[in-house]
Length: 111
Length: 114
Figure 1 (cartoon, rainbow over the protein chains, first blue to last red):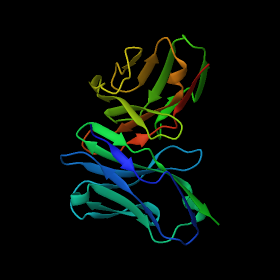
Figure 2 (cartoon, each protein chain N blue to C red):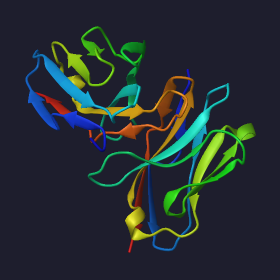
Figure 3 (cartoon, rainbow over the protein chains, first blue to last red):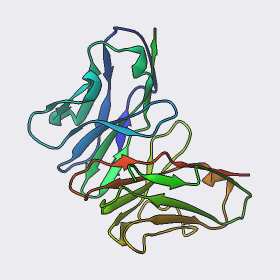
Figure 4 (cartoon, chains in turn brown, cyan):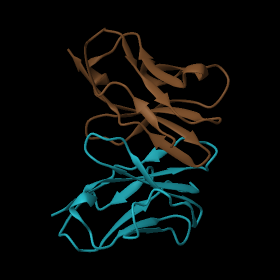
């Protein structure tokens, strides 16, 4: 079955630390990949997306993600996190109509 | 409206009751998705509409769940004979069309079945 896996359930960092959140998908065909963020009390918002082309995609708020086809991965990165990045992060993969989400990673950034 | 609107934001009901959850997508968006999110989990796909028709309802857990979108805009998710296990946040999302991929989410309807 098609699925999306996020390796970290809860990540705690201090401000200015670097961030990498893992995401792997099991789809076999051409997939579109996404990272969504959910700030406390808010709805899901798109951080960035990959459809094709340059496998390193840049999103809002200094986030980026790299698509590595051979590893079926789409890890999210940020060089220096801020307290305001505290949120839940969801990786998603879409194959035609089927858009699936990972279980999410809660990020807590300590000031 | 400016975003995806979902009502009610909170619904508490008793086991066995019928519930309707409404989603008003962004104007002009032809694709509409319903997801369910339980505590500590990611959104779980339920059903997807392209226009008025349900293009994929493979995520509906059983025949107690049904969704409609009669005019290709507003959608209603209907749950019959609710069970405690149906308690979750029900998310609606819309998109310009299936090929753009980006989904715009509403704030969700939190359903609690006592």
